[in-house]
Amino acid sequence: MFLYEDEQEINEKKSKTVSLDECYNKEWVVLLNKQELLKNFQCLLCEQIANNAMELTCAEHEDQKDVLSVGEQCLFKYLKTHDNQCPIGNHGRCDYVKAKVVRRCVDELMVICPRQFVRQLDTKTSCQQREGDVSTTMITETTNCCTFKEYIKEMRAHLEKSCPLKPLECKFKMFGCDDIFFDFNLEQHLQSQMNKHLNLVLAHNNEIRQDLSRCHQNEIKQTVNLMILL
Ligand SMILES: [Zn+2]
Ligand SMILES: [Zn+2]
Ligand SMILES: [Zn+2]
Ligand SMILES: [Zn+2]
Image (cartoon, rainbow, N blue to C red; front, side, top):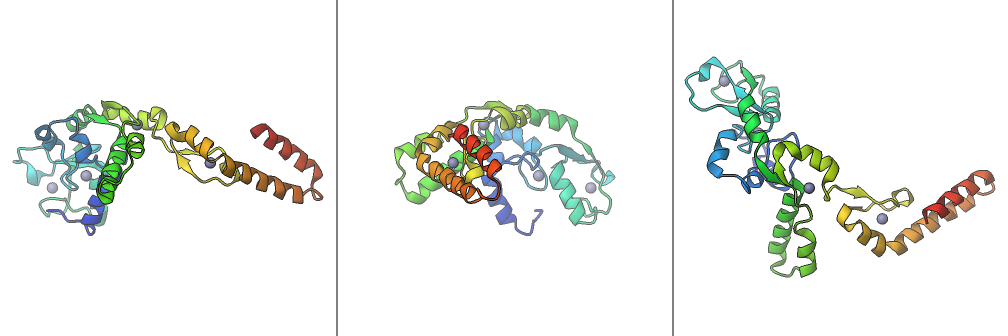
């Protein structure tokens, strides 16, 4: 109906990630909600669940029975690239307001953690790709890392604060470890990468040694810091 240039690509990306500003992935929301109910909250443009829903109120659609909901980001992107033309009906000026009722309903849809959802998708895909060649440890590792099950409106705070799937940086990053992992496998990383971390710190220490003649004082301070870290 409303075609994007790379619709295929966008849809593929949508099934992998859940952003806080884009419309919500339908497959994710439908896990805990009735399909029929969700139809009322669908974004006209991307056909996912409208995030920050806007309602089209142009005079041209006055006799429309259903609320014409569009996700805020989808609508503004569309208006920007289509010279403010209404996404439906081919007329020049598009009028819209915040769809307060739809927003409130969407806010109170129950969902699981979106990061957990993406992980489950990934596990599914890799299971299919490897055709049963997935070890049981990998499956237990990726299931139910985050048990969040709440209203959509609670999601942002969860992702920022309490989600165990929040990506973490290694505390040896300053020495050159660029690995990214999660709260639940932090210990595992520190244990299994002990040698790597030690080597990184030693290499770092060596560099400092070479600077010894140039700034003796500084070297002493940093070595003391390193010893505290180890
Ligand atoms: Zn949308
Ligand atoms: Zn219109
Ligand atoms: Zn989570
Ligand atoms: Zn590390």
